[in-house]
Length: 553
Image 1 (spheres, rainbow, N blue to C red):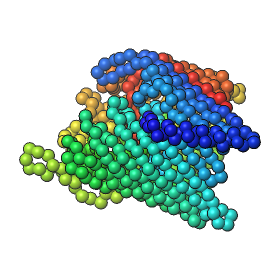
Image 2 (cartoon, rainbow, N blue to C red):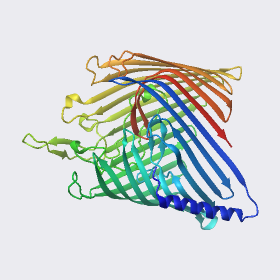
Image 3 (cartoon, rainbow, N blue to C red):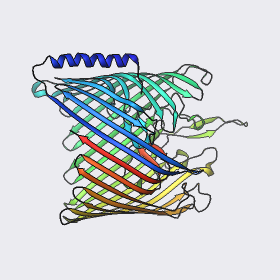
Image 4 (tube, rainbow, N blue to C red):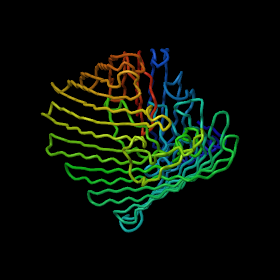
């Protein structure tokens, strides 16, 4: 991460000042907490072109020191190498935080989210190698005014720098320096108003050149809560200005915007949520879409995906990669519990790009023009690269020892090719997940997960239809042992791994509630993995994995 001399100096000045303040107090309240995660893996990684040896070793130590109103934190990381992302050997995080009355002040590393994330949502997801951590300072003020504290105010000011490593190309790093402010005000019980402003300077690598940019984002938020109803609406407007270089020869200042809304109603045994998204931060022609585009949405802009997230393997096998630059869609999620033993869940979603385009150049060159339409709602036409899904699930407790869960999902995901529509990537799946869990003798449990999927992939050169089956059986002894085995089979002749079956065994042993060891050996199919709408491809792996987790409080 960014290590500027000014930030380091500021950190140690605040640390020294805090230490002097603390030690001047008559009574010290000192507490220490720490956690450690060690991950090791060795085996063979499969790709379309070759099989190669794969090894990783990750040591991650987090320590916290609490002294009265102060908290100091540090993370030591030793990657030799890391599984995903850029390896680090040394201190990867350090901060000092002070809380007193209505103020929280932090110097050092931090993550932050403003409202629904249209302006700022920085986070870390190690399973896909994503990290948008800032290094700088943050001040938060929270206070209640008026009679009985009915008027509430919450404001945050942040400043700092970020080095963002591209998860698909770790040699490519974007740098940003931000100044941002966010506030929310609840003038009356049922209404919350809010707003954000962010300014950033950035350096975007494009080939061997660097494009300098500056960007501003303005955001407004409205929240309403009344009895069982809850509503949130956010709108953000962004302008990006580039400095001319050999690639972008003129300075431009295009604008983009985004909106997100959520309406929900809940009562005992019933709930419904409707999400709407309209992200237009960089709507451009098909030939201009690029991860190197300086006008794109910024990596720390991560708005809600408005797509259901699953924990089961096959339901997550062909996910949708959210395009925060150009995507409009909705999602409806309903749960209903007619009896204490039965819970039903239904979900429907549809998302697509905003526009179709046409080549209007009559020569051998290409010049795309937008075909205008009312783009408030998504389209199911192939030209808009739509993604839609229908999902239903029922969970039933037969008795206190036996629980069953059965679902069904239908998905279609299309990535349209305007150059050659016949080469568009069209994936359709029908998936049935089943879960049965049984406990006996108070401390023993058996859990069966069985999934079946029928799939269609238009890019297969041979049979475009194939199926997959996955079964996981887990046996546990409370509170410390879980033994599980997973077997997956497919008749897909063109799976990237070149295999048709994968078998893996896993052992989890808990020494106590704070210390756990996990061992696994076998083959994993891999595939696309996502976090908050951001996705990457993970190659199939065959080998041994070890994870040791320790918590000290």
